[in-house]
Image (tube, rainbow, N blue to C red; front, side, top):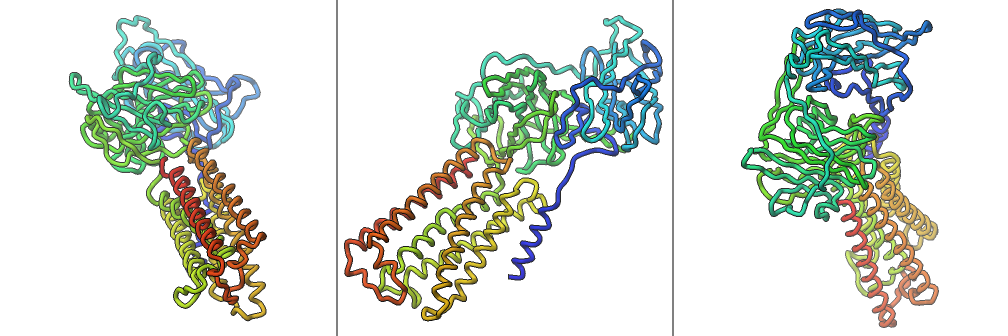
Length: 607
């Protein structure tokens, strides 16, 4: 028991640990193509930004140095603490960042390198408040046409603007001599024809979720088809996760965990549409310069987000060395001829943008590596093995076993009076044996979920985890009390029986509440939540009906010979019809709770 107490105390301490997103020391290179502070999903301001951008010259020439001033033009200047700014091409490829920042106040600002340039984005290095910033930008040596400076201005953690723009025209307006961008722009068009999953397992491979869906009715799905003539891969994706879903993302991973994964995200939200190439360094996504996609189509309508795109046989994600002043990066190549675990995730966007917000519902991962050239249907799960073990053990223990424990101890004490098991009556051995099994399964389930999530368990499990710990403590106390129960003739035996019964019923009710609260965890998909709550509600109603029926039978005398005291020596052979009927009822009850337990398991394991 001391070890259990230490374990529970550790869980309690860990439950207070939390993490807040934010970059007081400036934006990292991973935000080069989003420039959207993810301050706990706080949205950008929709009012005009008080800060403006002005230039030392009305136009620029190749290689020219332009002094830029960032400040509130009004006499009572607004202070600000953060900035992220770069110059983007107006023509050719709007993602391409051009020019270099060569002079800036180093006590407040720093230059970072975004693909594929050098010191081409400026950002703050601390959260000190300023009212004016003056810096110098050097134009590229080639004619790139007009550019637009795009900036994010941060007043404080809750107040920031992401849409500040200022155009700087080129002195040379001859579009014919503009140097083409390093990478071709990837555009998308509105999807006209619905994605088609009818060929899954025949003409194309598919990854479908949940386990029982067939394609169009899936929560999320992707089909893939190798095209030998061009040696590339055609993909179709869709999600019906929620009418407001703003993005769906496909990941290619070498294992079942997020980290070092290539991602393709189709985004359509609030009028913003894009297809994004990304990479998961860990449990978050970094948007890359879009280089490898083609034939992109997107549509969001009728609660569905659908898209199509083509990927070459090889694509790559880059990792920039942020300590280098020049572009210094490492490529991670993803060859589609290899087998990859496929991941599907979906979610909403940051307000008024096409920037991916952190997904709420758990992503689904294929159960095995997928050969993209094979026309095979693949399935997967949203939950790791330890989470499945946790849920399965808890459901078996508290839906199936605890129900039997309660019914046997309450209504079947005189069952098989002439038969003993290990020196005591059958009902008692069943009661005690199953009770021990319940606490073993409960503690094992708690350990499984703790080992899976560790200190992050608090981030998503309140209040489910707190109620779960109360149930653990309660059932542990119940089992310990059972071992130290007073003798049959002891004057306290009567009080012990009632106390034991009340604590047992209370624990069972708390366990039911805990299971309901599990489906309030935000990482559960809505469909899974509806399914799980429906099953648990049915279980609660049927449990109540069974208990009411047993109590009525008891009042009518049908259970009197079974519910007498342990030492009464009742002989159920005198009531063969009643004994046979009650045995049949018990069998039906066990089958009922077993069926409900299976349904509850399916509600979880199908997703």
